[in-house]
Length: 118
Image 1 (cartoon, one colour):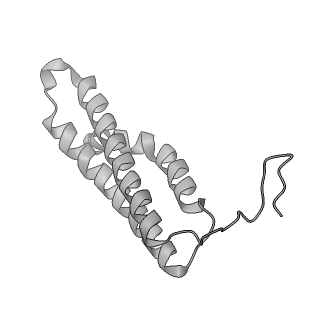
Image 2: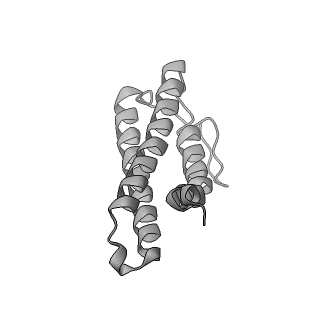
């Protein structure tokens, strides 16, 4: 296997999942969405992917090879995923403080059948 692909395999395999989580982070909550929040969200997503890549490379190179070649991939994948989720969790908490929802704010519409907002 190509050395670059081997080192980056965890990130390559997790990019679709990172994209799904990133999309959900970007879309919800829907309001408020000022320009500053869009910039903040974009920066948070870039930082999360970059931190995951750094964590993946660090753990891949630091893994004990005596446990087998697969252990490096398992550790790199676990660390990359954990770092990504950790950065996203911090971003969600900070975003809630920076861009609070308006008091008494109601959702734009409800997707739950049988609920009506007046």
